[in-house]
Length: 469
Image (tube, rainbow, N blue to C red; front, top):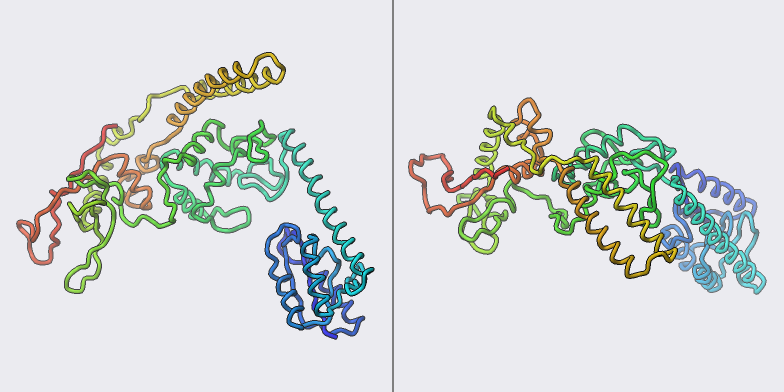
């Protein structure tokens, strides 16, 4: 008699597979007592039978049965096979067609060919589904109670905190603070991921950060010491904040701004001036492209205006010129003039206090409406006024929290070298903050004074103007 063993565990928190190993050992012992030869062991580790996610091992088991590859299926318990009545019915139909038996370590032989066996299988399946639903209900209630009390609801360790979900992991918390400051200074989520990876800071599962992964971490209300439940912030939490609540809101405002330019196609910008330099004729942005070089030189990276061909420039000499101008400016003694704040100095604490007061007033209006003290019209009018004031205050806070593209570069021992050592995203931020680059039409042929071996590049056809700060 040929036997196939199927094992499954819903959650393998340690990743060691010990649960399925124990099931397999018990199933093999049962196969030996039955005189059966185990032809295949199929396993779904860390996969729930209830979640609806595909179970590759289970699908392979069905294929094995359908192809006549086994005479009996051995499982530890029926709930390892199914916790869904629909799945159970599919399995029953297949076993009836192929005359395959199902024997369990804990529930005995399921005779799916007899009415009593079918009743037993369906009863066990219904009870397993009830257990799952009841457990989920208890879990939701427990999480709701924890959320109402501002307590951690449990689960995987949150980045920035220790295993208790409450105590700060100072190294990871510092990474969150650095990431928030990078976003506020105009840098990308990809730059944050690269910075964390460069520092050897991993995810809570020990992996390197994917380029878009820090966004989810930086958007968490947890960072501001706030409790979130089912997508809504419902109050203060028991754990300490990593960053100030209004600073967190400023980060959220930037990351969720529909006007924020993002690389949705996940295609890396290749050149310094892509989308930054402009055409002097039509004023359009210059985008990167290529032209075929002569004499077997291959494709040459270029800039050209997006909607017409007023200007076409080889990208490398233009970028070298722009970098040289920026480096020379960063090395001047009057560098401090570039660091003048772009917004007037504000009292951040006073603004945060005002934001808190407005939020409390908005909540009080809801309570007054629920108590019948005010009507719906008064509630709407009051809420509209408070929300307008709150948006104004938060706009001031976001501007105040927003840093400079020069943060960490201007303060370096050699700002020019720090600029050149920065990644392309950061260099583009500095260029965008400091200068406007305009590409002018250029005549054809060799420039005046050209000598063999020199490029045809004309620096005078690149206009660089410093922005007012």
